Length: 400
Image (cartoon, rainbow, N blue to C red; front, side, top):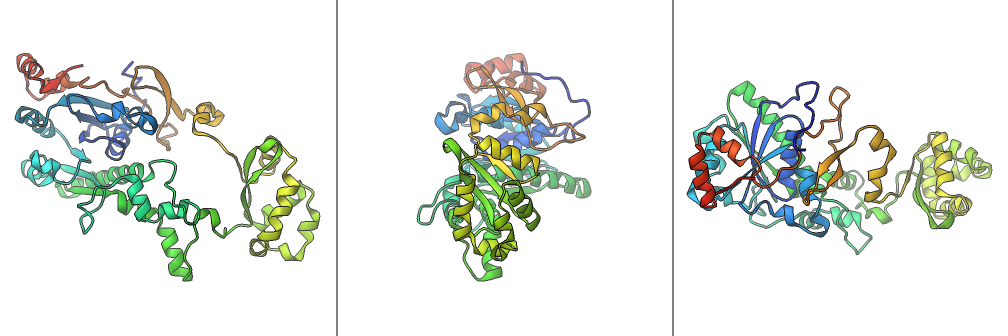
């Protein structure tokens, strides 16, 4: 169950070894992307396993989502023998990745400065709440930086800040950590030296809201929260239609407005000089939109979708996450793959959202059991069967 068919072509980071000391979402996302692209990613877990394995509610899907294509070794890093085993493993690595609180890795002797002295070619990726500066002592979470970084303000209604509906900064912060690691690998090819890569939640969030910052720089006017913003396009809304169904519909150019009006018998609006251009229609939204909503209200969402698709106009059903398991496009294009859940059952998980040579990077290894590869990896770095057994007896390591 743990091994899938090997990819037909070598993946770009095959032969690169990553040792990750990560948990939750941000750090594991970095390792996930490198693993999907062929790297051997070794997840160092505590003896009891990554806490993410035991989360409930919104965190219950974290581990199977972000830990495929990885190996697991369980080590007690509170014991010097556990740290020694980690150091032996790191000695074989190209990349170390971590997302613990500032100072944690230094206390263990596993910080970049210490490890770089042992291996100047090592690339070290740190995922933190903040890049070095006045805030770097703070404890950060995705929701914390969304609040302080303007994203919650932009997502919610005026006076009601609201976090985005997924772990956007954790996931993208991990993505930028992976991009930094890729850049550092290329730099190492040129210089022969590794370096430290830092990625942070707050700075990632600021990158996400940069367009709103620059809107203010360009216009001198503050961006309104998304629910109350003045859209750049006249028809760009969720419509409530027959039987209370909802659908997002858009007509974002003058050509699309022409097609839209003809498709729905709105010749009078098409001929109205007050609605000639997109900007005219934006200014007329207060009286124009109620007319459009009333005109479309007796159509079902399916009927509207069919007309919009036929006429190549933008539209979207309002989909709940669980409905995506049955999405025909995702299933037809191989966008979902079987994955082992924490309880051993199988589900489907979205793959990385890109192709290489027409293929989505797939699942070569299922999310590992705690310590599934401990013995294999310890033997590889020089431990005998007897030494491994002694470490297991003292609960310094755990074999699957």
